[in-house]
Length: 325
Image (cartoon, rainbow, N blue to C red; front, side):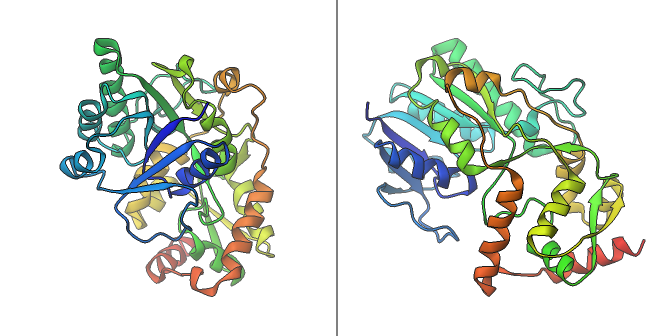
């Protein structure tokens, strides 16, 4: 069955792979965005609307007079945006999919593996608290009026353009120059990286699925890595041996405060996910791209074009100061 689908966003790390997969499946896909430039190529086979997801009036004007089988918002971060969407799409879609975050699960996690019933609480990161509040508003709307919500919680999802270490290409450049690589803690906390193509194949299985209405799912790889593994795998793909220096997350946050909430409120915590729930609704799905392959894709993509290999001098200097103690 062909679905009429609206994506608010649609060309980001997660949504670009989902958009391509939706088109491959033969659905009628419209992308709504601000029309600004992107480092990722346009998605062929899609329709386009221009509007600003952060502006309720702009969003309403863009979708005026239309209805959809499925609406997915990849650009919603605040409960105020969710309330706008509830008012705007109630009665105009059979399914509204909200992209939340696995960082919303309690930190520190009291028990592994994480399931969809793991409590939501993150006192360290405002981003996660806003996701939790947005979920609360959507669940209330489903219970009160039947608003047809499905909540999806991605964890750390990457593509070839997104280096999963804080600092991005600056860190890879430092590796190749023989400079120390800063890894938080002792590097042995557990983490899960999910390739966006693996995510897309599971996610599209939820679109139009009646059993997904009113429910919540996370979608992650089953591969579990330490942060030492992640740094070493990226270094190997870059053709070097890393000089890893371990520092407490709090110390890193003192030097690089913009990294603090995401480190302490997410990456410093060990995570393992139970994906049995998504697999029950999307039979046969498994994440099939291991990170060693994904790391090679990342390095190859950056090495293809010198303009992509941007070093942030402030971050570089901060990492040097941290490594020097």
